[in-house]
Image (cartoon, rainbow, N blue to C red; front, side, top):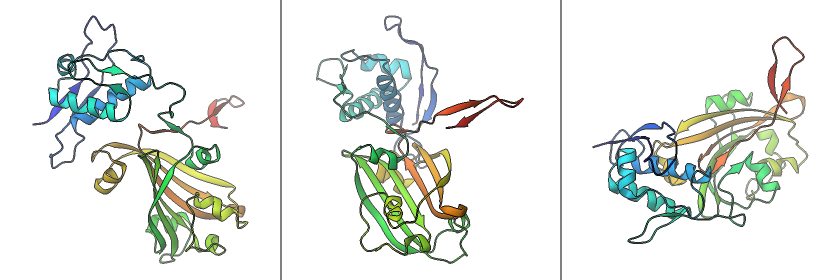
Amino acid sequence: MSETIVKKAEPQESGRKSNGVDATATGSGNKRGGVPAYYQLYVLLAQQIRDGEYAAEEVLPSENEMTAQYGVSRITVRNALQQLEQDGLVRRRRGARTVVLDRGPKDNPPLFEGPVENLLTRGVASKVNNLEMGWTTPPKDVSESLRLKLGTECFHLSRLRYHGEQPFSITRLFAAPFAMKDLDTNNISDEPLLYQIERTGFLAVAADQLLSAVLAQGDTAKKLNIPIGSALIQLRRTVYGRDNVPFMYHVSLYRPDQYEYNMRLSRETNSTRPQWRHV
């Protein structure tokens, strides 16, 4: 039987406002692959903690209160709290209430910001697991994005990236053969491939990218350690060299609880229809 998490009015003693969250969840065994109710509750509580709605050392509502508040079973609440504890967000003790931990300035920030390549130049450590690497015939949409004849082989690199022990992104990357001609494809390092290409003298000057939301499918969900059907941030990017020639295409999927993408905008008011523009 599925459960529905409905953010009901908070108990009067909490003084906390309702966020009006309404999401349908199914058990982990559901054949439709819905997101388990415990994970939806975990994501909701984790976001509230990270947004400061619960302060350090503040006591969370009891299991009974959450059961009534969110319309779920006690086992769902317990599983959500267990996940929060594993993430280092709360402290649980048998016979005692669950307390929010003080993460403090010394802890790693919960969210990454901006392109992964920029994070690495700022010294944000991450571990890489190369899932696939080699020459392959890319899908039709990749060939079209790189303006290559159908059937032309590209260098393909698929990577899972971690922060600490937590996986936070999967990237599938395709590079045109002319961009790889001066690289030893048998000796690719853990650095972003773009860095390695640019060191050969082939420079990137622009990129088109699209941000969207997708649902995690079976293999992706398993690698990112999330339930099937969980929401992911998808970033698709086509990178251009001189003379507006595309030479790299990649699709990256990010866990939204580990990553956010910030952009600086400027206000263009010189026309009769003012618009926001990327800086």
